[in-house]
Amino acid sequence: MNYARTSILAVFAVSAFANADTILVPSEYNTIQEGIDAAVDGDIISVEQGHYYELINFSGKQITVSSASGLPSNTTIDGNTSSGSVVTFESGETSASVLEGFTIKNGSAFTGAGIRIKGASPVIRNCVVKNNSSGGSGAGIYAENATITLEDTTVMDNISGGAGGGLYLKFCEGSITDCAFEENVANRGAGMYIKDSTGDLTLSDTAFDGNIANIEGGAVYNKASTAVVNDCSFVNNASIQGGAWLSYIGGDAVITNSVFSNNRATNTGGAAEVRNLSALQFTQCLFD
Image 1 (cartoon, rainbow, N blue to C red):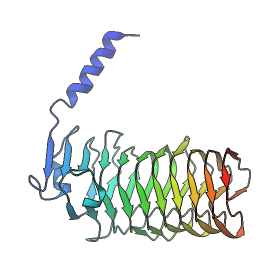
Image 2 (image 1 turned 135 degrees about the vertical axis):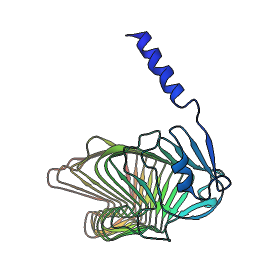
Image 3 (image 1 turned 135 degrees about the horizontal axis):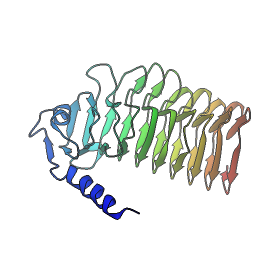
């Protein structure tokens, strides 16, 4: 190993953010977007509790936008001001681009009304994404060509006219940890719709409760993708086919230490339906 070169790169990485600043909203900038526009890589935008009617775009910056209180219930970004995604990541944002501690609500867009991620890899942590509506897919969160990191986040009461009421993933990989998907509605994959993944999607300690799909996959619809599911629960989800889970055309998954309870399908597969060359493996799971 070239230790000298490694040390130089490490020093450069540290020095790049050495002059990082904390930007205060609204005491220094009236809106969150004004704070983002003024920020440089490494900055933290600290948002005081309140209700902010605006749409924000990270504009490719490696910054943290966080609520000062750390409580999503205290700090809301509300899209009920104009049509479009409430939060946008579509300029190559990395895992150094972090959204933390907000309620994201009332977005209205064809895709990604709450949060839209395209060609980016942000971290979304300790948020509530709710009451967003899309005529197409991914009312709560839409991600395409992305690596998604979703932590300690609740996605609830979102409605899609197409697929993925809570979360829509296309050409994605990543991890979802300590999250909840509750009472989302869509035609397919009301809680989550996964399509054509580029790598594994890992779900850990995540609950799917009360999601309703009008056609297939009440909680999760998995197509041509690989999912690894650990310590999750699927309760009170409903659909015509695949009340909790539907795998279709290579929608493979390994599900371990998880609970399936009171899921309903008016046609077939109350807990799960597996179709068209898909492989679904259950290990130490409870079906009730």
